[in-house]
Amino acid sequence: MTGVVMSIGAVALVWWLFAVASGPEAYATFLWVAGSIIGKIAIAGWLFTFYYHLCNGIRHLFWDAGRGFELTQARRSGWTVVGVSSIATVPSWLVAFL
Image (cartoon, rainbow, N blue to C red; front, top):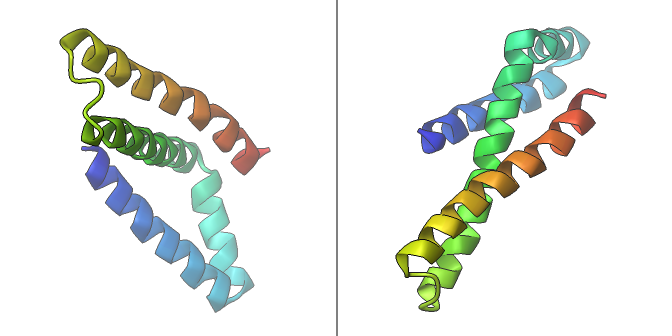
């Protein structure tokens, strides 16, 4: 699911770049959509999946080094990925909208 959200976020990023290049009217439309409640929720979801993939990639690097395969370590690192992703999402979202 997170990969699908990341892909949709990539399409939104292309829309943003296209809007910037197309002029003030197109950019204003993009800002209106991104600033709506649904847009803010979508951006928060995309930010979470971005950080989730980043943190899980780091987790996999440790696995590639042969560390963290015990069940308790794997569970702990999995919840750590979710926690760090959640914590990193909040300030990023605040920077985007404040």
